[in-house]
Image (cartoon, rainbow, N blue to C red):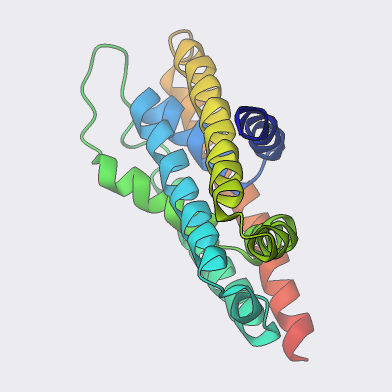
Length: 208
C-alpha cells in the first residue's frame, strides 16, 4: 500500500505541474496577499477534486460522464472564469499586501475563488478517466482500500505542488513592487478570460 501511495503522490505532483486556471489564480493571490491566500486557492481547487473522487467512489461516474452534465459544466466553467477574470482586472491595484502589512482580504474569498476556477469538464474528465477504470477494477476485486489509498496519494501530490509553488511565490513577492503585482493581476485576468472563451467555445460546439 505504501508503494501505491507514493506512486500516486508522484502522479498528483505531475498532474499539478502544468500551468492551469488554479495555478494562475494561486500565483496571483500569493503575490497580492501572501502564502496562505495563495494556498487557500489551491485548497479550494483540491476540494473539487476530492468531491469528484467521492462521487466516483459512490458510483456516480456514468452520471458525471453524461454529455448533458459535461455541457452544463463547460458553460458554468466559462461563467465562473469570466467572473474571476473580471474581478482580477478590476481590482488589480487593490488588496495588495506590502511586506509587513496585514491583508484585508478574507481567506474564505480566496478559497471560493479556488472552487470556482476548478469547476471544469477537463477536471471532470481527468477523474473519470484516471479513476473510472481503476475504481471498477478495484471494486471487482473487492479492494476499495486501494482506490482510497490511490486517491489520497494524488491529493497529497497536489498539496506538495501547491506548497512548493506558494513557497516560491512568497519568496518572490519580497523583491517585487506594487506595480509588478498589479500587472501580474491584470495578466492573470486576461489569461483566465482566454480560458473562459475556450470553455464557452466547447459549450457552443456541444449545443450547435
